[in-house]
Image (tube, rainbow, N blue to C red):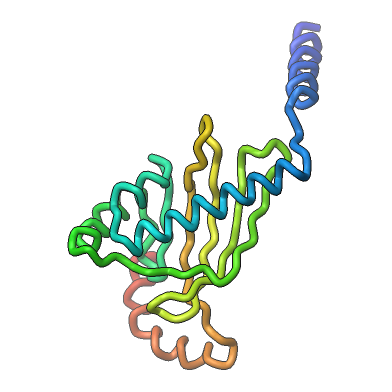
Length: 172
């Protein structure tokens, strides 16, 4: 009987919590998408201007940055440490957004996105997740990948075969 009462109470609390969660309007989603575009544009601009504080200030303390190399799965601190010498020299990187899609959860406190970028590596894709903390959007997760035309995939596979073999030894 005690288990039944506990389960009933737990179910009631879960239903009550869900029913009180605010679901945002479509116009709120549009405003959020505008905010996110500004945050991401400012983030990329901070790298272009080699503004270390502005760049890393947009990332959450527990954020993750995944780069184009298979070994690049960095915490914010690891990525900041790696990047600091580039920022200190006044030249980080310059990514220009070609297009971006932003998706907003029902409560308006969590977004995910994908973007097409023009970079020194050619066309790249970025994707990520942001969370609203108080009144500030912070980048939680970002993935950068080099976009490879399908017709060129075999050549890329051949070019990276040797390095992949060395890298994969760590997992065997």
